[in-house]
Image 1 (cartoon, helix red, strand yellow):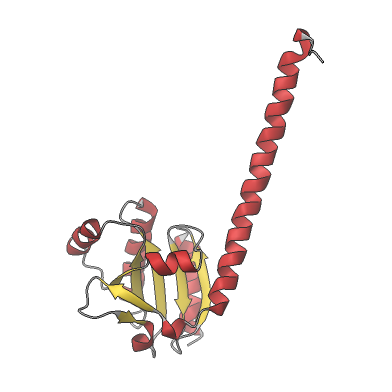
Image 2 (cartoon, rainbow, N blue to C red; image 1 turned 90 degrees about the vertical axis):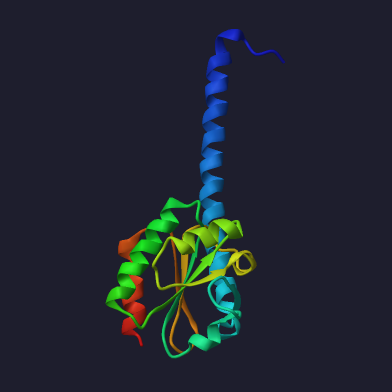
Length: 177
């Protein structure tokens, strides 16, 4: 079957439109599936058993050692400007609410870059390697935060750099204490 040349441009335009719609549909579907899988994985995690390799402490960082105060696990990376902006926001937030612990769990980053970043910051975070846990629970993106209450139980999560929504979730975490 031959395509008449006068219909070729219309044919290509229709194919392009169908392809575009398919890409948009499957991208949205994939994103919502990632968030659902992440939520399901987090509900299975016993937060009080989490252990991270610490960049700033001599020993491993155990979440169970932080029970008695709420914790935010902030997944970030040195190459992500959005992550660094959320780190700055969290620093400001914990200056208002010093009972909140922040585990700055770096993801997929070179150790020398992380150590250089830590040296140049004054954030009172507990810096740890979060890559393994990030991959285990399939966190959908950077920056992302996981909220743990003072009893060491998973409460909620936030994905992205929307600091207004993040402030609301952090405030809710602290109010529920």
